[in-house]
Length: 264
Image 1 (cartoon, rainbow, N blue to C red):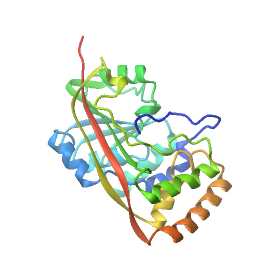
Image 2: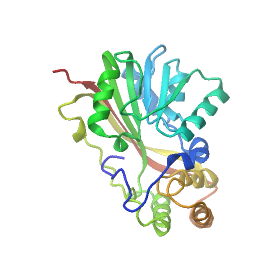
Image 3: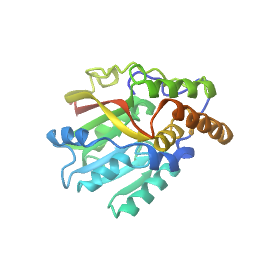
Image 4: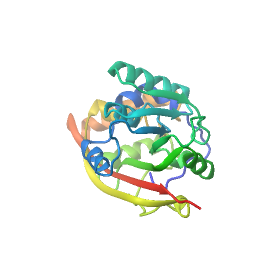
């Protein structure tokens, strides 16, 4: 999300603790998103892609389905193991690396696209920018993107966040206003915005998949003790029985920035 802190005061989090739920329940971007990227020439067969902060490989696996040569990079060995397992289960050709986004160890000037979905906020910006520029081949681009629910307009998201905050009052990602800048401040002077888009779409869930999605949240499965996650999940199940049908949709805001690096 744009504008939220990368840390929650007084707590630490580990995405590797959520890998199973993350891989199963965090939704990928809808077909409309990939159609928009396709119009920008992103995700074409043979394209060479590095997906930074790949997590369980949601973006990387979709690039692989589209015939790209893709390497998914993440600092969490647990996330990369889950990404590899899911890719192998689909018979997808992809490579994986456990490494920080700021120092991937991959070949310089060899990649058409570097992507970063929902993770750029966690990087050391100055070092990540240098690494992206090092990785990109001439004419290459950086893609950053997000898929975030809108608690100020979606009641299920809002009620769920209130529950999460009862268990983890330090969680700072709640009540996101949905503001997407035309150009993020960190990119100024470093990249030109070649294109960007922002739109809203309802993402389908069941009660079970929404519970899994919340367990895979930074403020829940990545931060809380296992017994706290279990208790929160039980209360969320009861909440959904009261306020949601068996299947429902949650409104999300989708955005992407497609950057060309500035040259000196």
